[in-house]
Length: 378
Ligand SMILES: [Zn+2]
Image (cartoon, rainbow, N blue to C red):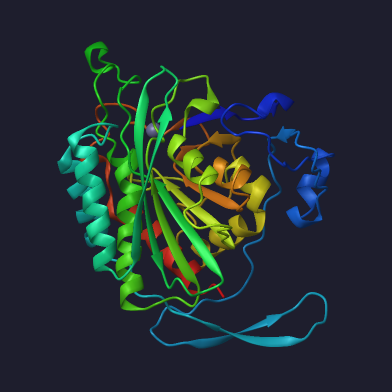
């Protein structure tokens, strides 16, 4: 994954060889972005796009109190338009076990770097497939192929786990599982051509979603959940935003079910490091502001505002971009990014992105927040 910049405008040539001739949303006024919800914004269907990366207003977290015991209690909600008071039950999700998530991450780390074409890659795919079947999901490994920027052709295996397939309202949860084939940010020159362990950058998101799958087996949410582990996110060329996220581009162009739709998607990337911070990412705010607000306010309610910080960043190239732009599903990226230094987590694309980067407190913050959101979705 790659940073596009703190405040940038992407030219109309965004319609490129990978993202295709898309129907895009166009902001006509930067200021209006700060004041309006996405649904109010002008949608232009000519196929050209002007992306404006913005810093948003600080959002209120609201004053609702969330119960943390094991009962279901009503919460009063006053609707803005009618002042009618309705009662909405808060669903207490199962307890996200960070030891369990850590074990799933370690299992992937122990396989070695899951670079394309490697034995570890194939072993990981088999591991995910078996695991999700055990949790009661319908599992499909979507096979395909994509060219990387260096002209090489790689097989792609996107792992897709479907829970409660009959449910019409669905939420998509996703992460990439592949490891970057070169630690090009490593300070030691001889490491720059070696594959990255990809433990926080790769295995952490997959591990958290595996634990979420275990929760779903215990107690099914009302909505249907689709978990997708994307391949080939991290074989990109720095400076070429379209060289990344090839697994999700493939999926978005070849949906695993015809006319597949989800209410929204949530992407996890680098969600396991100690003292991680997840600012609100620009593409997420642009495309799915209401979902961003829901996730960040939920995290604050259950005590994780120190992770889900009320800060914004510029646009990031990550798997949520093809989900938003090609599949047209509003998708949020929960991504560790240091908004003060404008850098990813310190071991990003280095040989030191190993199991020692993973902190169970961070896994718990992300996993429990995710569980709160999906179990309270209707
Ligand atoms: Zn990466």
